[in-house]
Length: 106
Image (cartoon, rainbow, N blue to C red; front, side):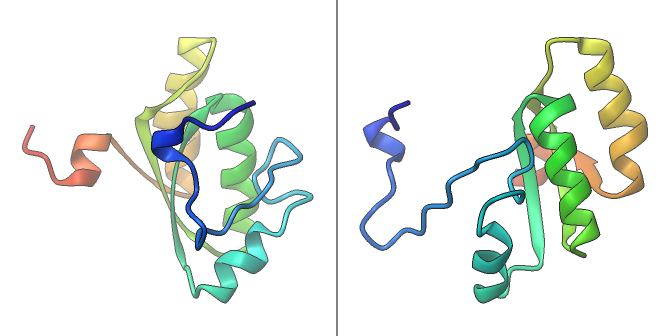
């Protein structure tokens, strides 16, 4: 895969290679975040039932504060996406839209 030049990392950016479904498993993401004293994560991604769910569960176990942007996620099954964002994720994360998170008036 190639990274689009407009969003490509710069020379001072840290790059973490994701190797498993969770962003944490098999990577140094936890070490990088802890070194930067990051305590709160905002999650988006494809697929809601894969990467987002797995990363959320592991991040919660690692005691990160979590926000999931419901319209910043997508799943092949819309009903699975709905159940996760409306019923499962709120148990461990604040769930909101991108606009709400960005402070854009609705």
